[in-house]
Length: 422
Image 1 (cartoon, rainbow, N blue to C red):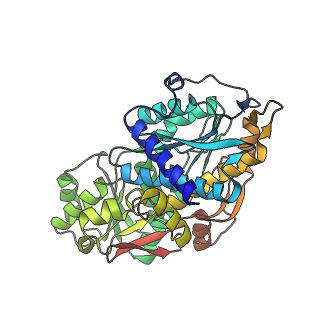
Image 2: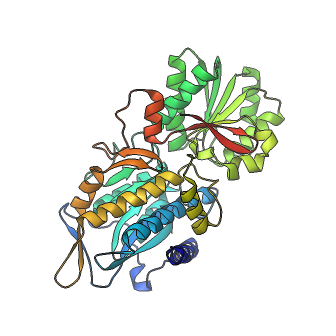
Image 3: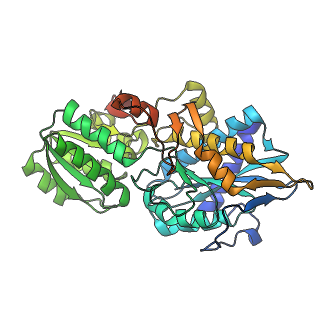
């Protein structure tokens, strides 16, 4: 186990370092990206020559504001791969499993598309874990679909992302949808917090607008007065919005966007004298990028929906060996480890060996095998995919459905995120 962990950590470190500099782990002649991969027939096959590796791509933000969470998502995937190797061996039909990580810029659509092109130019690419963010995924999914390459995101939550994906349906996600996160958040605000007025702010991006619209609809249906506002992603001076919030005197202020925007908005609201409850979505639910910058005492009592899940101690220990510390920046560590397991299980199921020792993977069969996956006890809950590739649940009770889909609500207590629901 230690040797596997060491090799995985070394590989990830090398890949990240080169990706962040615009390079790659492939030989120079293999690094030339194509911006529009040629469309393929759904029955086409991936053939990996004898002694060549099976490559698992990872698309995650490794630079910029979302880097802390992106690195945890990448390392969660690596941890899932390491644990799969420990259980099944480090090769499939004699072909080693390797990882290639690309910086996808999170919400920067052009960068996510570039990351996809670099991954698609990698010989032996069997599938991709990611993209990390909804806006970037929108740009990258047509590229993966055109090449018949499956991708599984553990964190891109835009409600209709999978439903509106390109023909072929090669995209899946172990993440939940914003429509359900908004339902949980709206129900919590109205029924548990008993708010009478809610001031809801988004960051103008795909994720933020989608999440806040869903939450607003749920809250209004429960008789709560809703005021909507927006601040462009990357805003650091929220004085204009703060100046509108204070006279409204809402019981609750909610923000749908990333850190540091969320932490800056919260601090400026408190400094200006806002005394009501503050909450945010999964993109801000982080000890490292929200609680620590704000300070444990100041952050006390803040609510989040889409929180880091309570993970088994043995998994956390293995993650720490790869990452260097326990999870604390991403809400989707469990979802990414589950995605890696699902992809590797499917590859092992459909791969066949040719007479010359090549490994052959039928792309459509791989997609269909993933779609038929059932995971009873994943790190992020029960996993079944619907016809769109979305995670689904047969449960009708809200708490049971949240448990199935891996959605938790939490509150900052003594500098930590304490899960309240389910």
